[in-house]
Every structure is written in structure tokens, then in C-alpha cells.
View 1 (cartoon, rainbow, N blue to C red):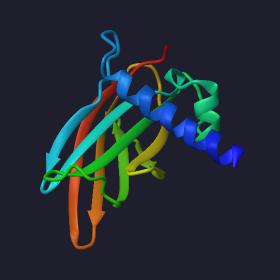
View 2 (cartoon, rainbow, N blue to C red):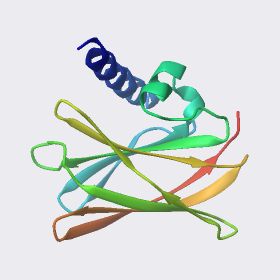
View 3 (tube, helix red, strand yellow):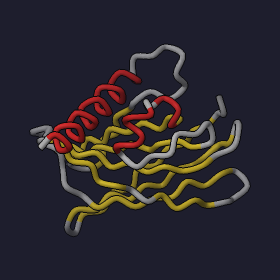
Length: 150
């Protein structure tokens, strides 16, 4: 029970951290929302160094100035309930190098997050194509972001 409480606490802290990142003025990547069909898709990409060692360890994430985390949450646009979906995606740099994103589903109570880590170099510009599927419905989230090494 104690281990379960620690994991739940880690997810709560992770959620609090990810939510607070949107309010940091010097952070180049703030959480954003994109409407895709019947979904409200919240997304953020940031350096894994923003995670505490405890949160990173609890979620199997390697903290590194060369690693970034993609966090996606999908809500029903009408009732705002978290959606259980399948997510796949790629990050392609300007040289055409493609990195496959392997998303891990994290559930905490009614909240569901999809996390993927990828490596990057300083000032590397990525175009993301993230496919979100539920049943016969598929939507593609497209993002572009420059990653920096701190």
C-alpha cells in the first residue's frame, strides 16, 4: 500500500509540475491546446531536466539535457472527460531524421496522460506528427518545436 501511495503521489506531483510549466515565463514550451474533431488535445514538449529525479524515476524517464518529454492528454470537447486512446507519433528534424515516439499511458484517477521521451541536440527543430486513434476515429496532431540543451 505504501508503494502504491508513493506512485500515486508521484503522478500527482508530475501533473502539478506539468500544469505549472505553462505559467513559467522563461520556458520556451508552454502547454497548449488543440481542437481535433470531438477532442480537446492538451500537449507540451519540454526538457526532462525540469522533472525532479524522484518523478523521473517513478515514471521510468531518464533525465538528461539531451532528452525531451512529450506529454499529451485527450479530453472529450463537450464533457472534458479524459479519453482512452491509442497514440503513436514521430518527431522529424529539418535534416529528415525521423524519431519514433513510444508513448506510455499514465492513469491517475480520472486523468490519463500519454508520455514519450526522445533525444535531441541543441537548437534542433522538430516537426511532430502524432496520430490519436479511438475506435474508427483517427486525428493527427501536428506541432513544431525547437529544442535547446540547457
